[in-house]
Length: 103
Image (cartoon, rainbow, N blue to C red; front, side, top):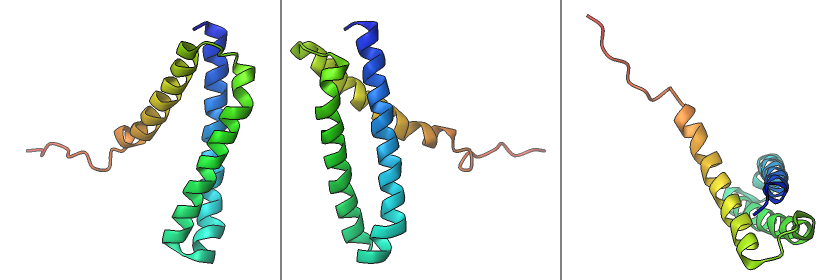
């Protein structure tokens, strides 16, 4: 995988991340108050899934991944970035850290 292909894949992942934040805002501001928490979360998940599939379908030609190994690498990269993004806020949360007792 070339460096340029990796940069393009990261740019697309950042677009997907922005859509995920917009979807969360829509869910909290509109869907949950309108149809309730369970239905709002369900519909929000379906909307985000459609957005991710649409973005992937529309941007893969621009990314330029042609071989199966390149497509696999882009998908695995997106998965790794997503899992790391979900884990980082938990690592930065210091509210649950127990400080040592002082004498």
